[in-house]
Length: 327
Image (cartoon, rainbow, N blue to C red; front, side, top):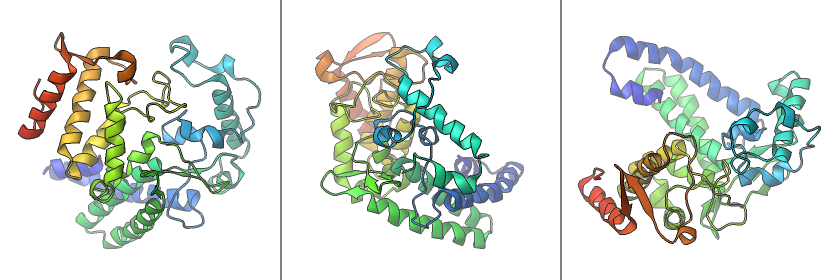
């Protein structure tokens, strides 16, 4: 976002304020690698599912099972007062979330200890893809503002993480997976995190056409894209937080990466769906992807009208040809 603001303004005062942020951003990147990648693998680890932003994704199920649930914290939860039971994380998941926090608190939240003492530790490909995109943007900003040494330092981080993310590619599955760094086991589950290398690297779409095909297959099975987990899998739950629902912030990342990778057609499809699902369901944080085979028909509510799937496809094609969205 800092890079976008920097590129969009010629106001010297605004650019000066943005430039003043760069040493702090560099310090944050240094911390990530020193505290969460102590062995220099190029992949930083998260030590709590919350750090991924994808709290209850099926990607964490096995790693989280190693965490002692501790006493029930049901009485502390606030989401039970407003979120439906089939939309929120389960009680056993939440007990483990809080037990991890208690463990960290008891260790003084000391960054030099938490990596080693956490029973949950995952090198999430999604987190690292976002970090890698941040590496590239930070290097651009540092170089553009004359910090040659800082840009070179970030370039080294970027190169190591690029190599590490490449190791996460599973050729048989045509997908990127993270790793449980406590067991060294690859987490072979198709969550949306595995698509985020498309956001990190503009060349990823061309380098890995099977990854793009995998995304297209997800979209083909959903009325609205992109689901946060692969539809049809046993772990897929269309209403439950990060186990299936559409999240617009991730859609934004996919749209950005696909556009930069030359797949404007697919970016337009996801953008169209993002607008359609918002109009259909109103203002909310998550949206159900609505399984096509379950509903047997696709309807998108736009401007008070129901638009059939065939008409929507025609409009997407029109959007792709004209480079704009047409309603």
